[in-house]
Amino acid sequence: MLSVVRNFWWHQKAKMELRKAFENAGLYIPLENNKRFPKIHKILADEEQQTVTFIFTLLNGMDPKEVTKKEFVFKQHFGNNIEIDGDHKRFSLIVYLQAIQAELTYKYNDISPVISGMKVPIVCGKDRNGNWIAFDAKTEPNTLISGEPGSGKSTQLRSVITTLIQYKTPEELHLYLGDLKMSEFHLFKGIAHVQSICIFPKELTDMLTHVYSEMLKRSQLLNEEGVMHIDDLPPDKRVPYIVLAIDEIVMVMDNKDIKSMLIQIDSLGRALGIYNILSLQRPSHDILDTKIRSLLTVRMGFRTTDLANSRIIGTPGSEKISRDTPGRFLLKRDELTEIQAPYLAEKAAEKILKTYKSSSWKNRFSGHSKASKENEEEFSENDIFNGGLK
Ligand SMILES: Nc1ncnc2c1ncn2[C@@H]1O[C@H](COP(=O)(O)OP(=O)(O)OP(=O)(O)O)[C@@H](O)[C@H]1O
Image (tube, rainbow, N blue to C red; front, side, top):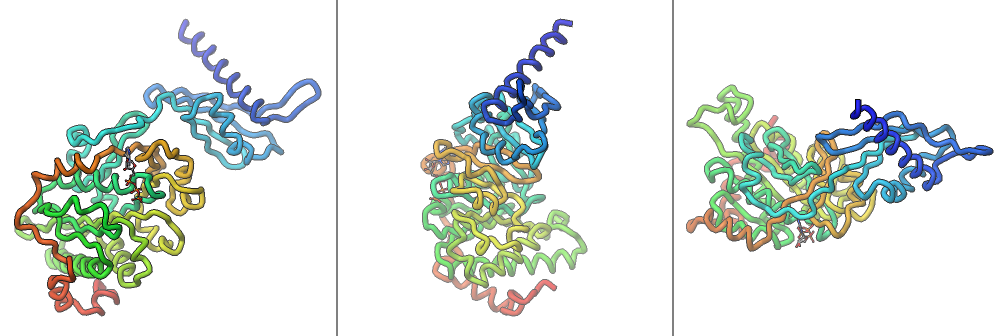
């Protein structure tokens, strides 16, 4: 009985607080001696998720834009951790009772139980409820990481790649890295998993040509063996997973050959065990046209300058991320989730990676190496650019 009473009073208090917020936000219709407020339909408390959700509808004639414009008033009443969503009439206001963790130090041991069992785990970070979030590139093969300078993209790539190196052997996973900013991937030089680190567009073209020809070979192999996925190949014919990661693609997306190969790799890579992660500072419709965007199904939207940028990434709300929280981003998969990325400093990464270095390491496509010439002999330009997989 006591809990029923407590529940009733709690509901009344929450309702009154929302009414006060409507009043301060000017969301009401004045009557002679009274005010008509939006209709509150439901107040739901979720103990597990630590949220309170209000569902309300505006009265006819009320401007829905006022709700988002007056978001600050709702924050004054319910705190900074709220989310307002709705269209022209019906809205939800979610109040998060637990703030997202602002700093999260990268520790492989914390991540390891979450990714256990995944084939090619891509670590994201922690959500509001303190749960680690990661996904398997085997089922979600192509990812876009985007956001303005200093928002945390390179750091995130560093954590993702460092995690993969610790999780898979060099026989199980090959990494192909494009470092067009010439800033990040030097850390991975000498790592046995890493086949190549490219810093110039020509090297990148050679590297992609190689990955593309590998894709054709794998496709033929699956055909010959009559299987649908590289995981189903007989043990003596197994091939490693490939992760292709390119930091800052803006420099090369006007190169038609590179764009064409990326589109084909992203379209066909899933069953062939070839996965792609692209990072990009300033998204625009020119760089991320609809074709490539539709293939990059996972999006990590770090802080952006405005809503237009966030929309291109597919993470509206990224423009609201504060400068004071680098590493904070919105993860778009089926749903949009706010995440804090782990922080792995360069020095800490160097320490982890030391044990994975090989003294016989060679950077395959650096300086336009002969490996690309071998591929050119195996596959003609027609194979590569005019649908050799048909
Ligand atoms: N997950 C994180 N947690 C805490 N701080 C972070 C995190 N990620 C990045 N930072 C801080 O933000 C700084 C910039 O990060 P980073 O270089 O990854 O940004 P970026 O988006 O790649 O920038 P640019 O596009 O200019 O290279 C880092 O030096 C670090 O101080």
